[in-house]
Length: 118
Image 1 (spheres, rainbow, N blue to C red):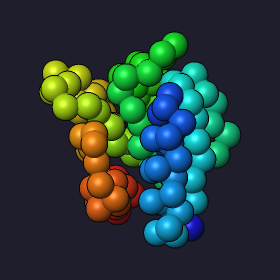
Image 2 (cartoon, helix red, strand yellow):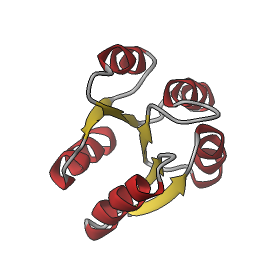
Image 3 (cartoon, rainbow, N blue to C red):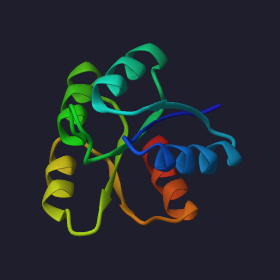
Image 4 (cartoon, helix red, strand yellow):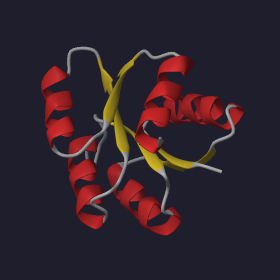
């Protein structure tokens, strides 16, 4: 079963993504911030990561760079609010494979996860 790490400081966003993924036969691991995400990544070795860009403590860009240091083949899709194009470009340059714009629908989440794990 494909394992996805869902990283978002908003509990409802993690729950929403996790439900969509579990309903489509993905295994999920959750993290509420970048520091937690790095620990969970190292512990669970997920097949893909779905990560918010805007988080406290360690933001998504910083976390993305750290995960790429740990595993240069990490497969990460960023989740971003409308109007954060410069952050999306920075994330893609730093190694993200795809991005999802909030508010999103289930199909877009699944498409991004299929893209990064396929």
